[in-house]
Amino acid sequence: MAASERRHRALVEAGAAALWRAEPDGYILESRGWELLTGQGGEELRGRGWLRALHPDDVEPTVAEWRQAMAERRPVSVEYRVRARDGQWLWHQARGVPILDDGGRIKEWFGVIANIHDRKGVEAALAASEARMRALVDTAPDAIVVMDVRGIVQSFNQGAEHIFGHAAVEVVGQNISMLMPAPDAERHDSYLAHYLRTGERRVLGAVTKLEGLRQDGSLIPLEASIGEWQDAAGARFFTGVLRDITERRAAEEKQNLLAREVDHRAKNALAVVQSMLRLTPANDPRSFAAAVEARVAALARAHSLLAQEGWLAADLRTVAERELAAHSRQYEQEEAIILSGPPCRLSSTAVQPMAMVLHELATNAVKHGALSAPGGKVQLAWRLDTCAGLLCLQWAESGGPPVAQPTRRGFGSRVIEATIRSQLGGTLAWHWERTGLICDISIPLAKASATAPLAAA
Image 1 (cartoon, one colour):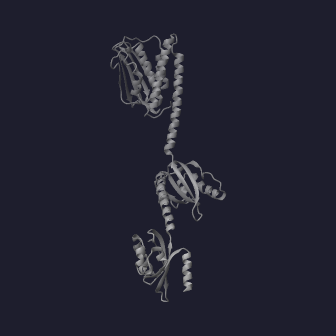
Image 2 (cartoon, rainbow, N blue to C red):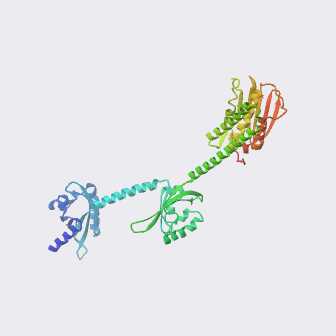
Image 3 (cartoon, rainbow, N blue to C red):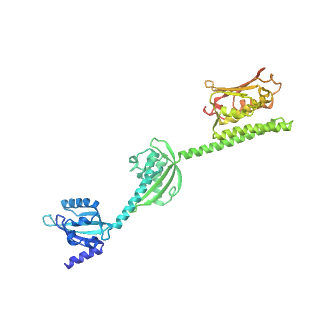
């Protein structure tokens, strides 16, 4: 008896909350420490009475596990919540072993009950943390890939499935090099072996740019951040966070293209201004200043329109409306300038030259042509001749003073001809009709249209 007491005391000191003994059918005979834990006395806990101290949700699973252990004549282990004397529900684990006779039949049960409430709290917190982490990993738009020291993929999240086009089951268990293009795929294993041998890093701990290989064989630009960690057993793993930067790279390329375009346009504008300063007649300082100012204003309007359109293209009608608006109300008459033609998106390289041509034509009409007198009109019409690959425009004046072919070419006509022929690669023809000037212009769509195949600027 004294030895038994010593055994019981040692078990309690080792962390047991209670000791128990039961008959072969699981009928509880006694439990030392149970009354101290729950307040149930010896008679109250006997038989099935101890189950009344368990949380209602835990009674059925506990009984089922107990019956299964009895049927298989094996040790029993079950976790449940116990209502303590102070009313709290505390997690405990009951373990018991069957004592068998020579025939293998159960003679009695002997077991111990341990308080595992703190452990369950830690497990619950860990499970919640893992659930939050799993939710974060599963919903992250980036690819999150874990591999071991052999380069074998251990996990592959939904973001990785979306980016690479592979299902997780196709990648987990395979070498990560399957996600890399040549020659990176061939080099990866040797790089990993070199790092494990020497500790020399190339990409670990840093953000680096690389290319990945989609399931369909296409390449994808990635930004990668790779870290190393160890599990509880000391095994080493690597986690890579890979971000698809296709859109960012396209935006950067577009920004660089626009910057080059703006630089190109600005240089062209400065070159045009220099030409105007050199060629505009300067015998009358006031007229010289007004002419230069008007032409610079035309350049500015074209520049502003291109900026609004992202330096890519501009509508021909809008360009014409902006350049001709100042002249259409010369005598406060409606529709002094009439525009007609289908939608036409001018390429960025054609907007500025077209604006200058229209400005010079309108300026000439105001000084010498249809817009120099009340009732005069200008019709600007255009059409797209897709068969010939041409944008055809006609500037036709009427209702103004009689005109005759000039004996010399002025600065405006030289600007128009140089712009059409040299900058836009087109042709033009002047018709000095008595009813008014007609100017026919043809420009290759490859030069003029934003939707035509690009031609050299």
